Image 1: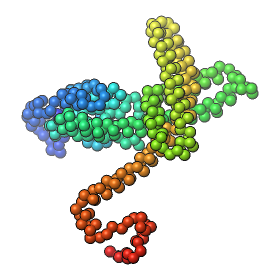
Image 2: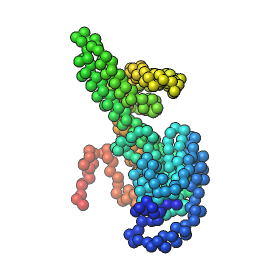
Image 3: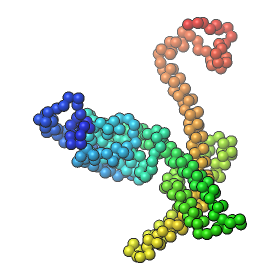
Amino acid sequence: MADRAPTTLGGNLPVSRFAASVSERHVASTARKPNDRADLAAFAEGLAARLPGSWTVFPHEHAAYADQFPLAQRLWDLGHVQWAFDQFVLSRDAVLTSDTGCELVVVDRPRRKREFLIAALQPSGSDVPDRVNAPNGIVVDADPVRAASAVANRLLPRYEQAVHEARIEQVATAVAAGERVLAEWDAISDSLCDADHWPLDERYDLRQQQRDAEMWALFAPFLDHGPALVAHAEEMLPFLDPEDRAEGRWPYRLRVLREALEGGARVQADFEAVTGALLPDHPRAEAAFANAVVERNAEGWHYSLTWMENGGALVEMARAERALHGRTHRPQQSTQVQAARARSPHAIRQSVATPAVSAAAAPPGLLPHGRVRRAR
């Protein structure tokens, strides 16, 4: 059941411009029955069973208004669902998690007993830039079959597109940060070496370790979702402009990006094998772990550098893909408009009364020979 958000955390009744008496609140609260609404947990289970892939359902009953705050902070919606979280006390929810990491939240729709709201949650562990369009949630009725169709056809495609755009933005941010790390290293490394470019003392090694650690921290998140970015770019490559492909050296750069991810994954696996064998209570465990981190960062330097040097290709290709979609979307719209006009009785009568003028018959702004433009 969804109630309006209280003015204080102690209440659970709708907010009104006219204050209700304590007795009125008591009568209103006791009049509610838990079975007034459709079963949200059963609906979520039915929905999860019908969505593509494998989904796990986590239903949750809210004991207090504050229980909805963690979900509200991760909510990826700027429309109806955000309004519900902001303005109402939501007594329950269900989070659906897919085998690919996608998370959806289901809550009651305020003031509608047989309807639910479904929205996506932002990917955990990453900040989504504000310029990425949120995949706004949807309103569904209590039928899991129809709801699953709406989620699969409307919400999930928007979610996947938004995630891809967010990952591309993260690539651009990481590449820019990597360039700053390299610029700082170039500016200071010469001062730590003699005239023959040999390190003067241990300060060179310490500063190099800092560089390696900063670059690995920028590169490591892409070990998880970088392969999907590269795979998507490889899939789109044949559809992009051949001149852009050649000028940007996209095929080569995609190959080295994939190799960097594979190499980085091997380095991380070796690191986890070494640190996993450490005994936590051993007196040297902390020092051994720190040494393993330094070694991991040093071995991963080549792969993190390769990613930063070539990651811009993913940003360039995403920009080219958006331009391609923009060009292909306009003719589709034009075809749909023409089909709609052909079905319209008004358009048919108009075409009989006034012969159509071909756009190819004359340049824009001119009529074919023999026709006179008349002022309206």
